[in-house]
Image (cartoon, rainbow, N blue to C red):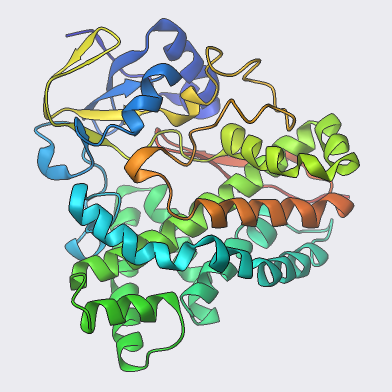
Length: 389
C-alpha cells in the first residue's frame, strides 16, 4: 500500500491545477484522504484515465460495489437511481429512453431559441453591476433546460441555487437542506406533469413510466434530477470559466474574431481548459486492479482526474496554454468516455458555441481580478465575474 496523502488543502483551493500538476508529475496514482476523512485512489495521467473511463467491467459506478471509502452524495432513492449510479443493462435502458431527447436533429432544432436567449442576455449586460455568471452564463442553460422540461419561470432560479448549494455547500447542513428541497420539488413536478402532461421531455419520461412501464418511479425522478442538474451546472461553469480564460488571453479573442472557423476548436478548448469537474463520478473496483504498477484492491473508490488528464503534457502540447487553435486530435476528456460519455454532449457544445458567437462581436470587459471561485476536490467553478467599464 503506497503512502496516503491529503492533497486537498488551502493551496489546492487557491490553485487546483498547480496542485494537480505536482501530483501528476510525482506519480500516476495516489492514495488520498478526502476532506471528509474517507479514502480514495486518485488517477492523474491521461494514459491511465482515458482507458479507465471506458472500463465498465472492472470499474463500476454502483455504490453496492463499494467496500470502503468515498461513495459520493447521500441521496434519497428518488434522486440516486440515475445514469451516474447504474451500470450495464439498466444503464443502457435508461440511456436509450433519455437519448431520444438529445438526437442531433432535436439539438439542432434548439439553436434558434438558444441564440435568441443568448442575444437577450448579452444585450442586458452593463458595466455598472452585471455579473457574467449570474446574468449570462447561468440563465442561458437554465432557459434551455427549463424549456425542455417546461419548468415554470418562477421555479428555475431557485432550482439552480439548490443544485449549486448541494455541490458546494457553505456547511454540511446546507447540502442536506438543498437535497431535501430538490427532492420535494422534483416529486411535486412529476406529480403535476402526470396530472397535466404536455409536449416536453419530462412528460415523455412520465409516459414511459406510466404507460410503457420502462422505468421505475425512482428512476423517473432521478433522471429528471440528473438531466436538469448536470445540464445547467456544467454548462454555466464551462461558459463562465471559458470566457474568463478568453478575457485573459486577448490574442485568442482576436484570433476567434478574425476566423469564425476556429469556433468548434474553441468549444473543445473551453471544455479541456475550463470545465468545472476536476474528477469524473467516483467509481468502485469490481476486482483487484493494477493501474500503472499500483495495486488497487476490489471494492475501493477510484477518482479519475479529468482536469489533470486534460493538462497532461504527455498528451497535450503546452497544456497550460489556452489555445483555441489546438488540434482536435488532442481530444479532451471533460465529457467522459465509453458507456458513461455525456448524453447531453451535443447540446452542451451547442450552448457553448452560441454563447461564444453571441459575445464575440461585443465581448464585455471582465474584471477578472475580482472574480470569485468555488473550489473543492470535485470541482472548480466561478461564483462571480463582474462586467466592468
